[in-house]
Length: 380
Image (cartoon, rainbow, N blue to C red; front, side, top):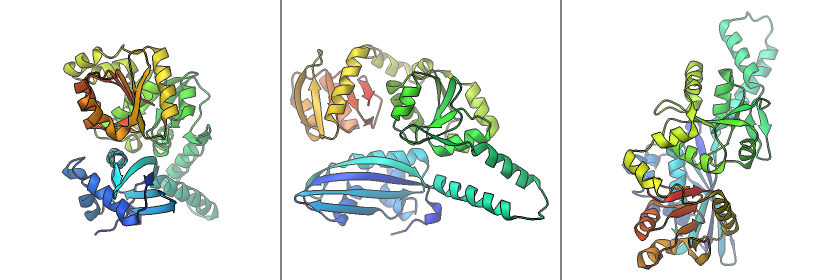
C-alpha cells in the first residue's frame, strides 16, 4: 500500500472515537475503509486514494477501560480543502467498529502547511538578519513587504483565531489561517479566520457588533459553510471565490475583485438554488420563529454527546428520545411523524430522505451530507 510523503501532506484530519466494547487498531482502520466505501463515488474512494498517495498512513491511538474503548484517529491527506472535508464527514458516518456500536467525531482539520509556512517565515527573517553586505534585489524587497504585511497576524478570542486588524466596523470572515495571510498580502487587514468549517463562538459574538462579510471558496464545501454560518450568526454580505478556486490561492487583484462583487447574504441563498428547490423550501422557511430556534438549539446542546435523537411535536414538546442509529427505521414504521428531529451528530442523506418521506418539517444537526430537501435544516 502506497505511503504519502510527509512533504506532500496538506491537511491532517483529527477525529475522536468512542466504542462500547474491546477492539484493536486494525478494527478501526478496517471500519474506516469498509464503511466509507462507495459513499463519495469512485474519485474519493479511500482505498484508491491511499494507493495513489493522496491519503497517507492512518494512525490510530486507543485506550481501553473496562468495556469502553476510546481513542484518536489521524488521517493525513494531500487533497484540497473541499475533498478533505468530505473525507472527514464520511468518517463521522461510521456506525460500527468491529461488532460494536461506535461514535466518531472530527475534532479539527489541521492545515499542516500553515505551521510549515510559519516556520519558514520566522527562519527566513533570522537568516535575513544575518546577511551582511548583500545587494538589495526586487525579490528580497517583495519578501520583506510580504513579511511586514503578514507580521500583524494576531490571535482573537478563546479559540485563538488568526486575525488582522479588527478595530473597524467591517470585517471579512474566512475559513483558515492561510486565507487570512493571503488577504493580508493583498492589503485586506480587517480579516478573521474560523479555523475550520464550524462557526466559532467568538465570530458569532462579533457578528452582533460588526458588519461581517463571509468570503468562501468557490466550491460545494464553501456553500455548505455559508449555510452553517448564516444559521448561527448575523452575516450581511457573502463574497465567493471563482468556481473551483480556494481563497488561499487567489492573487491580490482577484481577491479585491471578489470582495467588490459581494452580495447581500439573503440574495446569495435565494439565487443559488433552482426554482424547484426554492419552491420546495419556501413551505418550511418560515416554520420556526426565532424563539423556537433558540429553544431547539438549547435542547441540541443538552443532547450533545449522547448519541441520541429527540423527536418533537409542533409545540416543541418531546415525543421520544431514541438512538440516532434507529431514526430511519423508526420513521419508516411510524404513522405519526414528529415535526422536528434533533440529531446528535451528522444527518445522513438516507436519514433526510426517510424524514422527508415521513413528513418531518425540521432537522437540527451538527452537519448534513446533503441540503437538497424540502425539510428545513438547522446547524448548531
